[in-house]
Image (tube, rainbow, N blue to C red; front, side, top):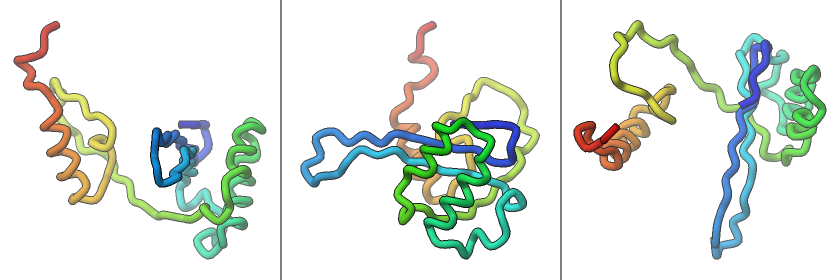
Length: 130
């Protein structure tokens, strides 16, 4: 994740396929996340190539390699996906750590499915030795 003092950041994640017979290739997912008020007017109506240039312009003060990463993406894969954020409640502290998707807002059906899988994979605390 590339974070600066700007009201936006760049999230990247490598998806590597191993031994996929269907010809699936590994790829780098890039998500440019910005507050609505930091985006240029009309960005939601832009096509992929125009949106890509607007994102590169927003990141104009970033290192040239990061700007190249943005501009090297397939412009037909550039799209806008609005999402909402919430301020966390004032939870009491304790002996729980939230990991991965458990820490951010997701659709309820996805959270339930992943919570079941995480619970299945986790050992009871009594089984853990220090």
